[in-house]
Image 1 (cartoon, rainbow, N blue to C red):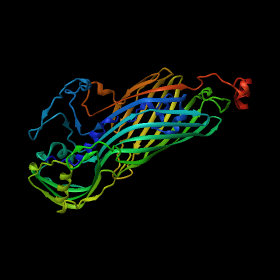
Image 2 (cartoon, helix red, strand yellow):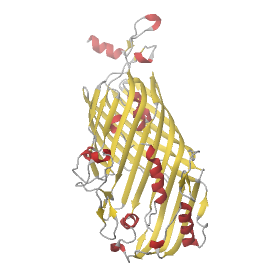
Image 3 (cartoon, rainbow, N blue to C red):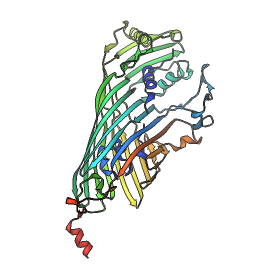
Image 4 (tube, rainbow, N blue to C red):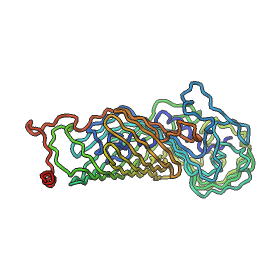
Length: 501
């Protein structure tokens, strides 16, 4: 038996491949980001140079890990598009199996993050001090965090990994995994709370109705074990919980169609943005939103908390726990599980002597990948800007999807028809990356990992995204003042005096 303590996590990940996301910096940061800007800060809607922005379709796929890699000699990005292509394989150092990936053998704990997002139809609308957005999305996330090297090796290479035999591993730090696929419908509202002279403050919030398609989690609080040989495992103590909800018949592992929604919940975003404008506040007399003029700025500072919430799975859900129990596994190589139910019954019997003793209920809760988002955007000169952003994930529960940190500096050039940005980011505080994003009016395509297109380093993950929208700029229609007179801007008297002098 392959000791794969993330068996169900992988099942949910495979199920979630229909959705497609990391931060999409090239599509969310600029003044033409429109409806996409609320993915980093709901109060950023007021930053837009459009008063109306209609989302047609957007997609992002991102995966990164620090354990498995494909050698740069074997890797080519374009191989993914070759029909019938077979990836090169190599023999294990121990055992007889062939594998595509190599493993990093070091003292660092292992992690993996898969973030996929498919943005459906949506729209943003600005009227005076008010901005609203309606969005739809299909999302899928998988995270594995703080996994010890020895556990990662046994999970991937099996119990026949000889260098770890006859070592008593005592793990006191927590590690685990979480995954979920869900659809969401979001409503965002932003309000210009303060506007005086050169200062602007906008606040915003999003509420998202979540429809869970599948989810799973594994949380290990502690573990003490020994693997004497490739067929024996002695667990001196284990403290862990595990749950899953999937569109499967757990007795046969067959896919079950019909009721796609396995659970529901709500997610929330909250944000605030301060803007230092280039021009003192003035009153715009407009009768139609398209008459509004865009106000330029020197810099902006935004802060937000994202994805606060969880999905409660109540359909076809199972929850289990092993509370500081021991077990002895012999003849592991002869074990052959035909279903998830058989596997869970065996685990329960091994630890409790009862097939059902580890069962805790028919409800599980998976928490969203919550994060703190901070943005600083500086208008350097003309169409040239530079942005600094920090995304810092924080878990709200042991069954939370954990979002790795990302720090990015993004210079960009933008105008109405073309935009180019070059994100320079540090992922999880130590992985440097260079990205590139290009916008051609309605279409944005980009990546935060440009090196994936070239075989300059080992392949450990990828990132690609695009966004297709219909933008309608502020000031796109002629002004109509009261009673048919031309619209006028009423600027503060201090500005008038300056113009006379």
